Length: 127
Image (cartoon, rainbow, N blue to C red; front, side, top):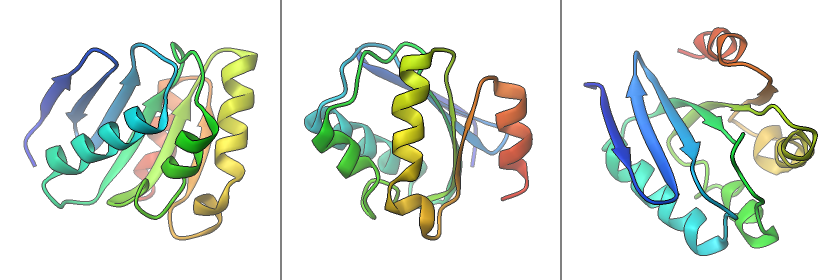
């Protein structure tokens, strides 16, 4: 797949060198926004599975329904592995919670990181 980028008011995607980078620009993430993000990701990936690195540094919260949806089969559809990058205790707490929910115990591995370099290195093992 060719590299691309997409940006909306609340999030942006950049596909580069086999990894989809997702960044939340504005929050909080509601169920409606979570569904929009997943739909846009699936549309942009055109049915191809991908590795994803999600930057939640600027996230102002994720509501309970959004967390449930993002951890569901539909929410993780098309993903081979997911890395979450954060730099704050609050978002680290949210990300750790997210990683403990059922999808992480299923077919899609997920892990939390404090920098992009380590996250990318870890993701590469799932190519």
